[in-house]
Length: 159
Image (cartoon, rainbow, N blue to C red; front, side, top):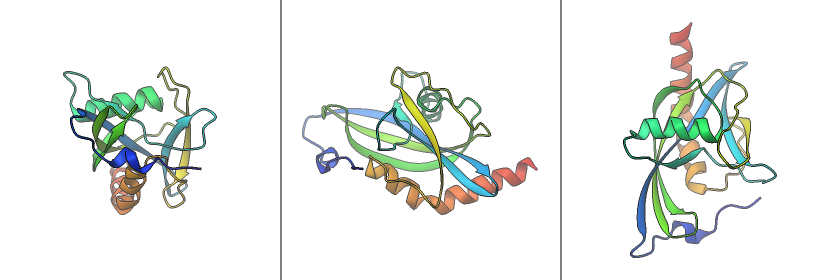
């Protein structure tokens, strides 16, 4: 497996700026916190669902929409903010600042609607694969305790 090359994290002069939103989707399974990661079908590298914010959307709305499109989860409960990641997007012509949020779901399988063929897989929060985008991997690892705490608090409030 490979991570994104270093040049994705070097902001060139005069590059267009774009605001994005995405999220970590979590669920509980036998007392374990699982998170959903996606990858292009047949690819080896995993990423978090994310994309650009459309006119009129809040960051949270955009994150939920991107999760619906790329991971296929419809029943999402926003639990909190996780942080921001920055890097070049696509063909190195846009610098994207992506705001990430934590969502809870009880859905096990998602049905992505995005034009790309996304594959969704659940991973134990303590046993994650290598991510393609290192800012996403760092975001999840740095927020591991916060994710566990927010998911646990949400589950207790549901009981």
